Length: 150
Image (cartoon, rainbow, N blue to C red; front, top):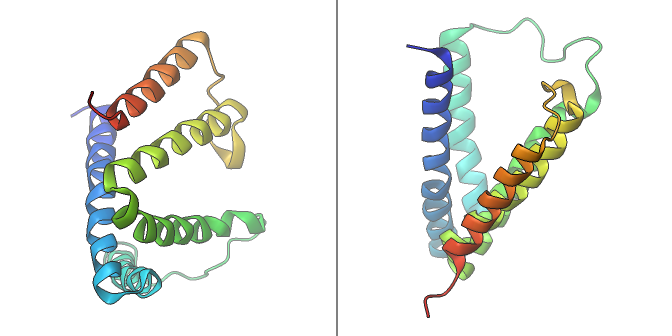
C-alpha cells in the first residue's frame, strides 16, 4: 500500500479519536467534578501506553535529552496538557462539536503558519492561492457545521 495512503488512514483514525477523547474525558471530568483530575488520569493512562510502546518497539533509550536540540522542542507536552485541560473543561459546557470545531480552526491557522515558514524543522509548504482557498473552504465548513438550523 502507498505510504501516503497509510499516513492518511493513520491520521484519519487519530482525528476520529479526538472528539471521542473529548467526550470521554469531558464526561469523566464532570463526573469527578474535576477537569484537572480527569486530565491527570488521561495522562497516566497515556504515559502507560507510551512507555509500553517505547519499551516493546525500541527498548530502553540510552538518553532522554538529544544533544544540540533546542529547549523548546520539549514543550509539546505543554500544548497537549493545555488542550486536554481545556477540552475537558469546555466540552461538557459548550458541546463536543463546538469545542472540537474551534480546535480545528486553530489547527488550520497554526498548520498554515508552521508549514509556510517551515517552523520547528517541519517540511516547508509555501502558502499558495490554492491552499488559501482550501483553508477558507475548511473554515467555512467548520462554521457551517456550527450554524444553528433555522
